[in-house]
Length: 303
Image 1 (spheres, rainbow, N blue to C red):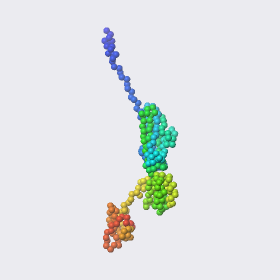
Image 2 (cartoon, rainbow, N blue to C red):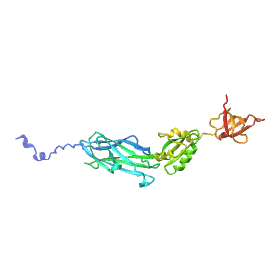
Image 3 (spheres, rainbow, N blue to C red):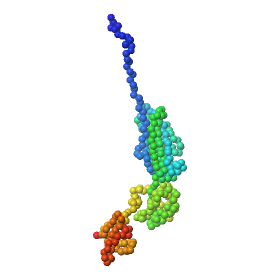
Image 4 (cartoon, rainbow, N blue to C red):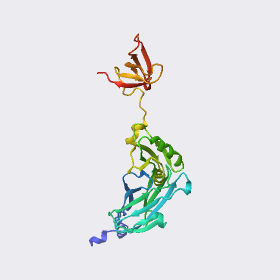
C-alpha cells in the first residue's frame, strides 16, 4: 500500500491557504508654518515680512496649488484703502497678488524638502486706526485635493508717534495750529508737555499728510526722523503727584493763597491728600499751615 493512499484528498483540497501580506498605506502630509507671530501691527506705509514654509511628506514629488485669499476688516468697509500683498520665493518670479489679482498658482514640491517663501504685507498710507487684513494661505495637493493645509495671518494698522521740532517757546502755538489743520487727517492726539522744550509729540496715522501740514505751520521746524516708542514718552503721560520732589525740612515759598510770597519750612507731607504742612518763618506765633502741594515752590533743601 502506498503512503499516499491513506491521505484524504478532499480534506487536502480544503486546507487553508496562507494570507497575502498587507502592505502599509503611504502616509502623505502637507503642513504650512510661519516663523514668528502670525498676528502683527504695523504703521502705515510699512511692510511686514512673514517667513513661511510648506513641508510635504510622501514617497514621490507632487504638485500643489498655493492659494491666497484676503479678508479686509476696515472701518470704511469695502471702501477702505488697499493693502499690498506680495509673495517672494526662491527660483520663482515675485508674485504680486494685489496688483495682478492672481490668487493661486501650481508649484512643484519635493518630499522632505521645505518650500520656503515670504509673504509681504504692506499697510496702506490711507489706513485708519485699527484697519486690518487677514491673509489666508492654503496649500492643496493637485493629485489628492483632500490633502491640504492652511494658515492665516492678521496684520493691523497702528499709529505712529512722532516728534515735531518747534521754535522754543512756541510749542503750544504749534500744537494748537496743528490741532485745527489736521482735524480730518488721522491725527489721534497731540501732546505738548511743559518739560519738553522745542518739541511737540503727535500720534498719527497718515504721516505723509502730516508732514505736508507741518511744513505750512509757522514756528514749526519739521518732523524729527524716526518713530518714537511709547516707552520713551510714557513718563509725560503719567501726571506727577503734587507733592513729588518735596521732603520734610525743605524750604519753600508759598505761591498761592493768603500767605502768597511767604517762606516756610516743610513739617509734614500727606501724600494721600497731596497736601503739605508748613511753618511760616515770619509768623509771630509758629502755627502750622496746611496747603496743597502745588501752592508751594521749593527754594532750598534741608542741609
